[in-house]
Length: 288
Image: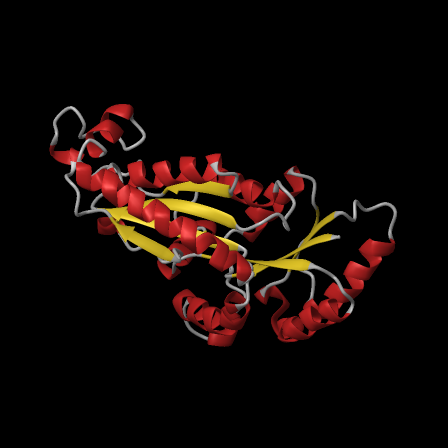
């Protein structure tokens, strides 16, 4: 059975994730207490009505005291020889606060913290850190729209979740904040900036004119080759360690030109090499 267990910060997009998984054929159950997870998995195995090949369940802080049994539930699944993947949804604190203000919903730990939403989020992050540390997939939804989240989740799980490591290439602008979810970050601000070229300023690294401009410089070609060589070396090492997800960030000043061109170049190379790979240009649409 393909079993996905979803948890993470309240407001980080678990409902949107469930919707995306349902659209690609998963049987989904929301807000299940951890002690019931092993029993539910057994029922799915026995049932002939549920498409037991693909099941996703959400468990989070809405369960409060029930969440304390989370790791016991995972151990029970392992003891029963269930294969599962743990998906952790995260977002920056300020983004979570904004989402709660927009929806006017009550944070599940607001009463416990006896103060503000910010304190409740801080407390929840502390409680969930052990789960994040063992997650197979970590998705930071800070900069995702609902549509982008759906596309990203679909790309992760549309194929069999045991077929290799998922590699995500992200472009971003340092002026808009760091790429905290990246395992590796390459700073390409050392290269000539198309922003100062009048005809290229309002284009992006996905436009041929911009890409041609960047890779017309020998140092850009050499840097791209060295990065590709390093990634080719690292992928087998990560696979041998059992890593399920690798996130590679490319940063420039505004996240519109150089980082986009490099992220897209690596994305196309890895895709042509037969890897499971996605690309996300975080700040491409932000006006610099």
